[in-house]
Length: 193
Image (cartoon, rainbow, N blue to C red; front, side):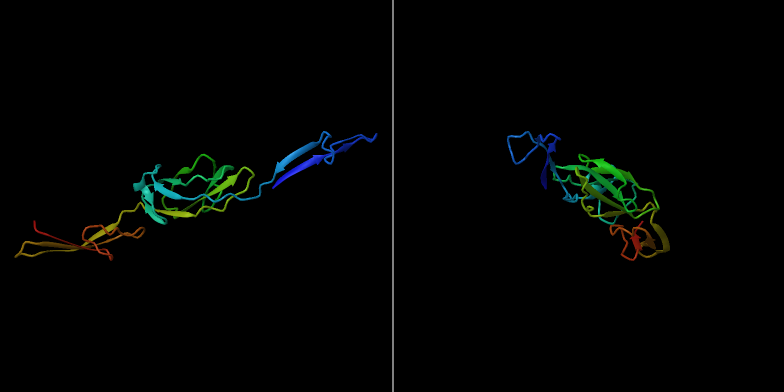
């Protein structure tokens, strides 16, 4: 709230200054505003692989990437008294202090230390902190999938060759667009040379 503090002084002779009850007096006063309202938390938290915000590099929540370079991006807080943001990690919510006009952080992940958790806190000029923006987690997977050939058979009449095998990825799983693979990682490829 807004407060006005008046100062009144009297000397030993009975002279005084600062009577707020008498507007004609010269009043020494200080007007202060006490802000104890937390700002709104940042919104629009998103993580991109690489140090850019190209839409094709947007990573889903709890997603996987093989790129150690990432950009964490958020929407600017709409309140006019934001002083700075805290960019945070799982182990340290106050990892990096960023100016109010900065709404992204470029980071680098270390393979083998995931999943990575990121958050952002807005801090206003009075020092009030918002709650954390939604925490966002990312996993890094730099291991290639495993592929094994189980059998190769040739039909002597049709000349068709069939190859059966398996594919697996213990960290991020397989994409469903791998040619000839099913959800269990079985692969069958048939062709005529």
